[in-house]
Image (cartoon, rainbow, N blue to C red; front, side, top):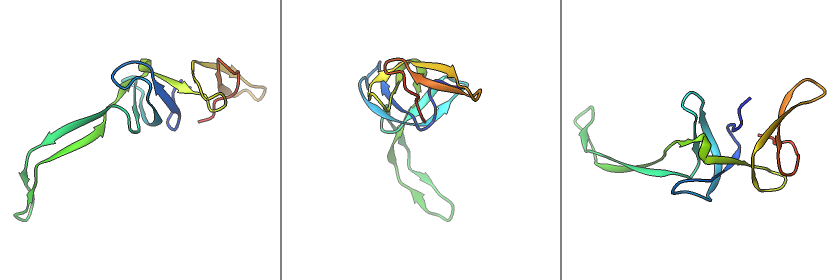
Length: 109
């Protein structure tokens, strides 16, 4: 089980976007990175280029969310609405679940 999962609300704790909150769009497990909706926006300039059929694709500036490292985000607890560390417990039914270290409630994704 991962500490941060897709659909979680997280808060950025380091970097140029420190303090911003957003929902996790995607988790890149092998690279230890997450993509957060509306956070860490970068711009990429693309040249004009020919398209099939004699058309021309114009030059444009594309804005996109770049991945952030997992160590730079903390999960926001839905119960206490604070950024918190994540604890794990195994319930009576044998399933592992994530818990908030501050208010001791289950973190649902």
